[in-house]
Structures are given as structure tokens and as C-alpha cells.
Length: 242
Image (cartoon, rainbow, N blue to C red; front, side, top):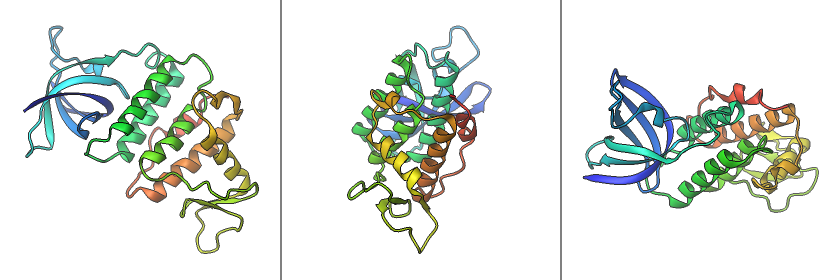
């Protein structure tokens, strides 16, 4: 049955000389794998350039209940980027977040609040001009709400440790495991949780502090998501912004 929806590109893989497999998170069907025919012709109905990391695609696909790979019949850009592909900082962020979402968001069921959050975040990044150095950190912390991993902020006091295994702050250093961070890092994490895209430019961090926060967040997800791998784009992102 042919269905129309909007999807966010997470990952692409060459299938053969004229086809690619695209992993997308969609508005109405959650996560899915799609076969896209991209013949090398100027008259091709669908062009491979559409399927860049985090691109928003409106498409029609043949959805069959006994299949895990759906064939796309038509596709076009739902939101043409104005800056992400052309800004080296934004494109590096998009590459990292697409890889992160590809590994972290695995649900095949519809989740419209999550989809709306992703669309809002992607378009915000594309439209902003300055002050987005902390964008990926804020994005990942807020994403944890939708995945059921948001830390418990109750009873936080300055000087607390953050117990990453139990997702809570504690005045005592955990004794039964080593998955915790010290108070100086815990306070940065609290600041990140209080930020949003409009206010994050007010929280100054240097590159080393930002890289440290990214490592902590990545380690936190690895603790709570089974088989979450080391991300190829992680080290590249740590080198961005001064």
C-alpha cells in the first residue's frame, strides 16, 4: 500500500550501482529502512543528493506488512536547508547527530512528539546564525527525555556527584560502581539541563569543557542503551569551536 509521510535521514548505504538504502525516522511510522532507486540520469525522479544527514524528506513508499525494506516511489525535500550543508561547523554537527540518532533511536512505532522535537531542532540549527556551539550538547540532553533516560534532578545541591548508572545526583561518591562524575562535571551537566536553544549562548564553555561534556553524555547513553557503539564522528566534533 502506498503511503505518504515525512522522514529525517539518519543513514545511507549503497545497495548497488543504482540504488541506496536509507534509514529514516518518520512522522507516521517511526524508524524504517527504505530502498531508493537513484539512476545516474538527469531525468531521475529521485536524486541521491536529497538524502544528506538530517535532511527532511517528504516521500511516498510502498509499505507492506511482511517486509522490512520499503521501496520509495517519489521523494522531494520537505525543508530545503539554507546553511547546514554549507557551514562546516553545522554540517559536522549534523553528521554527528545523524549517526547518534541512527544508533540511539530504534523504535519502529510512531512517536510524533519525538519527531516534532527533531524537526524543530534541525530547523533551528539551520536558521540560526551565531551562538550554536553548545547546540549538540543541549540537543542530546533534551533527547534523553524522549528515550526515558532524562536524569533525576530532584534534590540536587551544589557539590553533588552524578551517579550515571542510577541517573541521579548524590552527595556521597558511589561505592558500588565507578560510573559517576565528580561535582565539577556534575555542575556543568546541571547547567546543560537548564539550557535551551535560545539561552545556550549565555553559558560560556571552552573547547575542552565542551568536549568533556560530550564525552560524559556519550558515556551516559552507552550505559543505558544496549550495544551503543563508539561513534565514528565523536572525535571530530570534539575539535570544533574554540
